[in-house]
Image 1 (cartoon, one colour):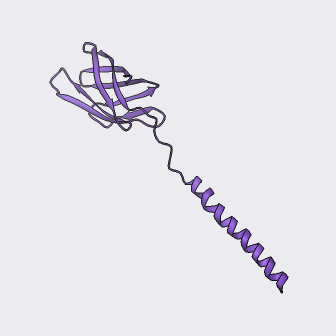
Image 2: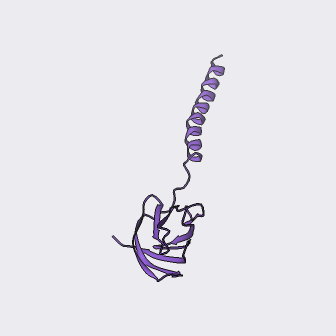
Image 3: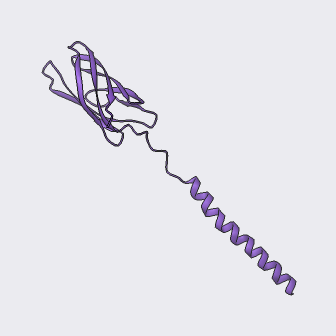
Length: 130
């Protein structure tokens, strides 16, 4: 009988070790998705357009991987804007805003294309160093 009880304690000890390991390994598998790249900062650069004069872009700010781009049209349509969410791979695309826009961030450079009522524009801005 003593031999059987000793074997029971050894088996219980093995189970206790396994139970302690399982939560650690399963917690690792449940990590949150990888966050978007760090694209935050203030960007400045140039905008080249067909239909209107080229212009300088100052003060495009990305916060938490998001930005809103505003564009004043020349044909009386007022100011158009587009809210953009940058994906983890650096791409973005919002065709449902009133200034349809798509583009990509590579390193410290953000490039975008958009269409307003009076122009087709390509935007290239660079993140300012702090």
